[in-house]
Length: 341
Ligand code: HPA
Ligand code: ZN
Image (cartoon, rainbow, N blue to C red; front, side):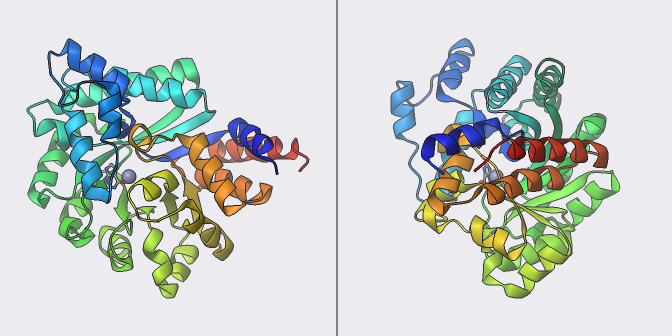
């Protein structure tokens, strides 16, 4: 497939995004605008100098700058604008369903009310459904570098809004913060009706993926790259139909892989894993859904069927109703049928 055909093919696919941190969609231009209206001075003089700082050797170097950027978010309107900017961007990329993470502790730790954060995000998501026809689920992530006790406080704060929250996740610094640290709070979260996911096996070992399954009882693994180190685990992920929400640009930028050609997604599809592709933190890694699909497909020489499988897998792994999943998967299949490649 030539490059221009591949690009056009990917642009037209109806897509589901299942691994996106809303704070990671904070584009520098919007960051400067919100900083100005909140009278906050950023450490960088311009959008260009800020973007120059987006060079990371590992997850922690990224997180340090990601948490810094989030500090300019103060008012409900700021969270609304952040979310709305993401939705309009991905609408232009034919994303029709988004399951997005937010990190309440990044904000409540700075004295911002939980309600301020979620009201802004949720109102934008509702507007996205009405005006852009993008369905959504909201996932509250616990920061794993903080204590389980802090996560319990966050769980408590979330309860007045629990009808707005589909599930909980686990993100931030993986090494040294294994899933086992959060066993109790995940159990309590499930008792409140939240679905469960966790980042695991991004930088951490395959053992962390096993812990996320055994101890946290998650239904999806975010990233999960390292599962390929462990054949028995791979078999289990296949048998239990556990999706892996992969993020190729993120993996490349955070040096989880050294070049796109090394990305494990093709191998995972070959083995029958429910692998999907997403953007993680698109403002920092400079690629939304289309760019992630395109660069991955190009580097790994994915064929039409593999690309279609990725798109179908994302709806399959989503938290949509069976009926909605079937409708979206039929639309994907029909779309690919129009391409005679
Ligand atoms: N990994 C862990 N935590 C994160 C990430 C990620 O890729 N993005 C935002 N928080
Ligand atoms: Zn992530």
